[in-house]
Length: 406
Image: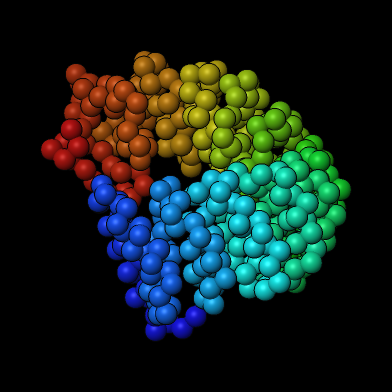
């Protein structure tokens, strides 16, 4: 598709779509865009197809023309017509399934490109998508793999083919196969050795995606990621860390166990993963508190303090150790400890006293976000004995005055 019409057509389509949203009576516009789909000028057809693809419903009268547009010479017109048909419910999806059997590979590719944007594909499509994945090449194969991720529960028969696709020379095909394997989950356990190999051999290109796929393959996938943290290749360790961050909350107990047994960089990466994980449970607090009590590395302590901060009052047992860190002028993680205290026990007099004693009038701004109640900052600022409205920004080291911050 030549650039001479691509850019203006996209701009026109956007303007037309906005116009549709601004006008309550959209029937005339839909009729006009439907008519433009048969225009001899490709830029007009592209603009009309894109505008229709942004609408949600009200396209019943346009169905015959949209079906015809699935075989337009321009690939983008075909894809946008497919997207418009998807918004028409079952009436629009039936023609798309028929178009997947079209002898023209370009038509099949465009339809697959539209289908991949629909997360609620019918599981009944799985056999056809598996057949297409096995038969197609290039873009069509990549789109088919992505569509299989949307019908993951019904795509079990595709696991051997997706495992083979992970090793494809086409990186997009390999990426989408990893995405599909992750969506299928522990049932795709047979793909684990291949995914581990890909993470180890192509850490920069596919390492993160392979690690995320491993995080969805059950306990053995978690063990593979923990083993990768001990790799001599820093890129492999970084990829494994990404995988652990996106792991299911069910593996948190195993990560806490590994936190107690691992050492060095592996332990730091596990702590970092715990800091970044969603839905960190309150029962993780005792293990994190024990790890903090025994840790002498300030960098790792800062990661643990970040995880404890996410637990809020559930991590109250860590308060004495955090206060100890705040009092240590040589500790590189003093601000991280103070920030954790702000979240865990903002109203605890010991915390306020520790901050005042450690920093005095230079009490750092504890975090970039505003405290839920603001009480802790107000308590520091309203001390009867000192003016605590003068301090410094912990991140940038800039001075801020009472007139600017109070």
